Image 1 (cartoon, rainbow, N blue to C red):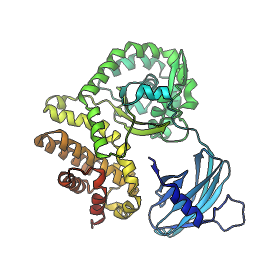
Image 2 (tube, rainbow, N blue to C red):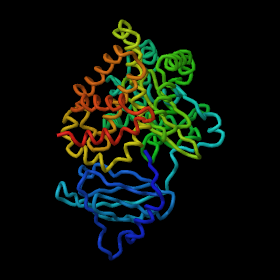
Image 3 (cartoon, one colour):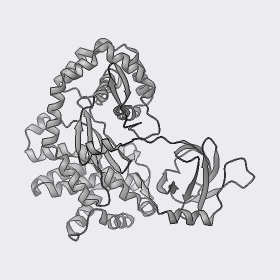
Image 4 (cartoon, rainbow, N blue to C red):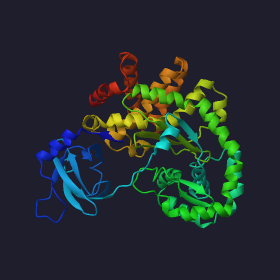
Length: 466
């Protein structure tokens, strides 16, 4: 999620304020006052957000990855700006006065040499330009097999309703006591949230004989600055060799191919890409990748990468198996339901960059989050204005897609299901009203307008809510 800021703005801010160097100098500690729950950041001429400042502890540390040894970092609030100088291996101190909470946070920022998440060579660009790739990657499947043998695998996070799952159990349960399974079981016990990172980061690796090596494209695929799976690669190598995983994966290639074919023919990823590019014309991706495992039960995630003039968006999803209920309902309803899983991941790579342009306005519109999310419901995890708005837009875009793709009767059924899921199941209190307003704006927009053009209007609507 990167938005580029003009160089003139960064230079203007620096010209107004002295660069405040690292700790150890006698200057007063830099201080910024904040009324809202986020600050705007400018680093290496790019704009980002320091979200959730009211939720961080009073002593807060963060380490940035930067290419240059010395990098200016600008922080901007509604009333203040400060410019810090980040240096590799050196701590820079500043403080945030949180006016909403009436306290002060002591912040300690530092930096380290940055390693690109992805390197797209000219050969990679040529091979992937314009493609939509749907795949069950080999090492990706390996880590999911290991997950299926842990206690976490007993939950619905692993999909068990296939003959394939039975085959996995037959082949791999004898290796359940292996060191690899024990270690990943302990990691997921400590924090189930590690599942996403470990699974996504597995895509950086490939087999070279019995060894697992970096594939030469991605350093990491999840959102941090380190590949979370790297320390455990020797354990995975040992598990794969002992359990004869590679032979199992090869044997099931026809099954994986059938799922990929079903995905390509019936889930309309190409239509989604065309629709999103039309509605967000300033956002383009050179390639899209949809990565899945038939073992994944419900966890979805997304990321995007940019290097060497090439951009790639990835959706990591579960396969949309057709249930018995879906087989008995109209085909259009089933198709719409199956499209939702991958669409709600792909669209973040389009809607999020647009949302970041309106961070200050969103801070005002969603200032009182208690009116938008619900404690002890999944919505509670979206606890800052930007992420809350993005998730409202995420599922509202599903309704817009349905409106364009399906007849009115099918749309009514699908849309009602989206609204119920968001309000009742996930706790986004005002989603129905938000969705209705965005639909109204979309249906009455000028022919030349796009969804991106409607952001100011829907944010104004949210701001006006009591």
